[in-house]
Image 1 (cartoon, rainbow, N blue to C red):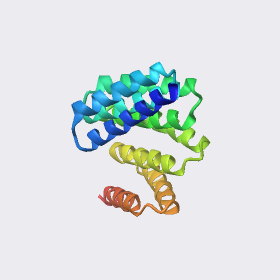
Image 2 (cartoon, one colour; image 1 turned 135 degrees about the vertical axis):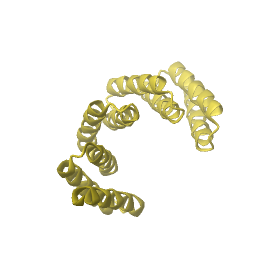
Image 3 (cartoon, helix red, strand yellow; image 1 turned 60 degrees about the vertical axis):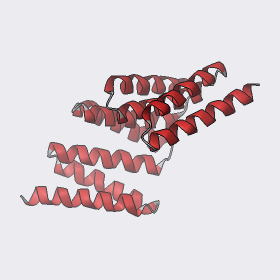
Length: 184
């Protein structure tokens, strides 16, 4: 019985992701909320946290920043309860994105730094690379060239190490943007 509920809930979350990918946002929200309800019934804290993170992504996509923040903070709390470090790191990274949208740069920086520390602890190179890329972008916007260059060069190396040329190209573009700032 519990396995059936978990299976249904996980299916609903996957369907929600499909709807989100197709920009069918109301259907995505309903699927994520239904998944969350079933995961509550199954008493799966970790899966509830993951559902909340997906809801946060949806709300961020819809520019509903208060709802997104609440979802990410609730997800973070449940990921802490479940002692799932990678989940916590991803929640913090998403909160950093949210604070960037609000132009709360200090909050964004703090969350990206905290995410980076947890991604390092979890030995997640992909997560670290994105934390550093986002910090680099933040530092470019702030005119902090030295910090931006350091973060972006490290991110570039990580993306090379894990063979993600699309992200390498993105970081190289950011480094050229930084160079043009320094020259001017």
